[in-house]
Length: 122
Image 1 (cartoon, helix red, strand yellow):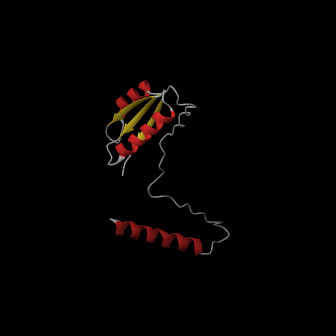
Image 2 (tube, rainbow, N blue to C red; image 1 turned 90 degrees about the horizontal axis):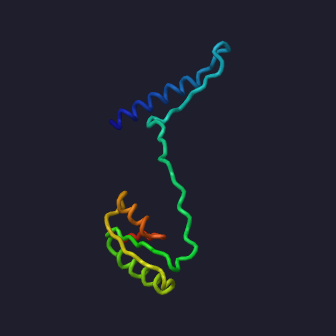
């Protein structure tokens, strides 16, 4: 398949060069070639602006999510310890699950937490 695409591309390019390099008669006028992407246009998915940050974590509910990647739990343990030291009135809740939170978990965390930390490992 790849060789057919390369051959087709080469043939198209050769034809375009031959047309572009051949002298145009005054009756024909200028020649314009349009080069198209064979994959077509790829429309990017819609994007969302990030949520505004929380000014102060004191007294806030902070959700901490671990996606079961190796070492991520150790990293989040340290983050939790540092947050408890700096914001003793903050309430920390741990969540865990697969890489993709999914709609149900995202809705649960958004109801229960004012701020959210998503930790990875590796």
